[in-house]
Length: 491
Image (cartoon, rainbow, N blue to C red; front, top):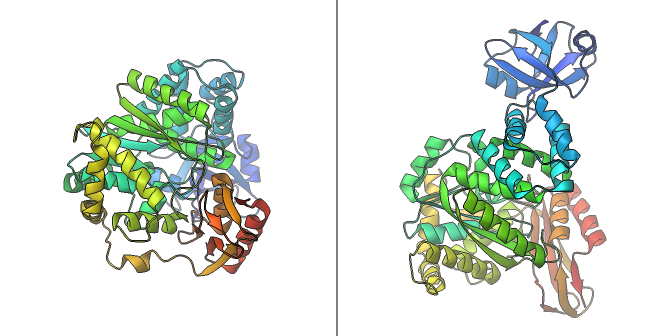
């Protein structure tokens, strides 16, 4: 069937084609199913159906399709129903608890990249991994499949650092990268945006500079600054992982096998050979300590099979790290540590120094046991701040007038303690939930400022947490959420 493109100027985040009800009946397709589009190029799209907007001979295409196929309004496209891909059968096998081989996982990854699978089918794949887990062999195969269906960068002697996340704040990466790359180490750090947290490293770095670059741009930045701090989603490195993460965000799930494959595929794709993996554990972290120990062993073993030299560290994730939660508030914490301000969050500094020391020792920049001293010297001498400035400027940003750029949102409310006592618990999960309600991570200036941590002694009326929001309505939602969840326990 030949249809004429009508422009509705919409962005869907994935290839979506809108057709009339009559056209859908003629093609025998329903909402959420696939159609194949053909002009000079072929592409699969997910069907949506309109009433009264389009004529029977018209089709509206999302901007993603128009850009990829290089067509615009008035163009004619051939449209046919697309058969269900074979990979969907493999997803059902995983839901049944069967072990999948490399070929099956490669087909799934390739179809995810090509948009041949719907969000519902990807959700079933994630659910299958979550319910049944994956064997070591499957995890290795999934990692390889993710790498082979995307681009790769060949950067010699590259080092990387990654946290499995789950702890509010915890913005150690910009500090660690600045310390270590100031010694000449090459750290092409690609990071994610928020999945289950109020901000990802990429969201925070966007407060300082651009984070979306091409592979060639990344190589230029690394040549100038030894390092980069960018968003991995723009590089098409292991793109199947990025699309799975988008659905994980909706589901609120992060299966262990996918977590392993996600992290390791990105490291392989960017060319890293040496990787430090931070595994926070604790009551409100992603994993408890016993699970963290097992996960560390899996990272090291699977990494070894894939040719990576992995070092893992288990860290305390029982409470938020730093004071800020949300892109700009976390960026303020990062800058205050690098600038060695008197009111900097010392817990964030301490953890960053520990992680940096392990990398410096692993890469033999200093003797074993001397890494902490070296890292502290670099930080206190402001060499790390100078290196961070180099990275930011190489990425098109600037630290000029930074205090004004990092101002929190205009509407705020401070919750105070209703009694005197000792802070016994601050839940990262509850803090993250409140941060979402206040507008994070989309509203970069929104978030939470923590005035206390576990073990702090407070008096009645002392400030506990300040909420920041872009609108009064969002502040109201967050206040209700805070009252309901009660994330700070005082006894």
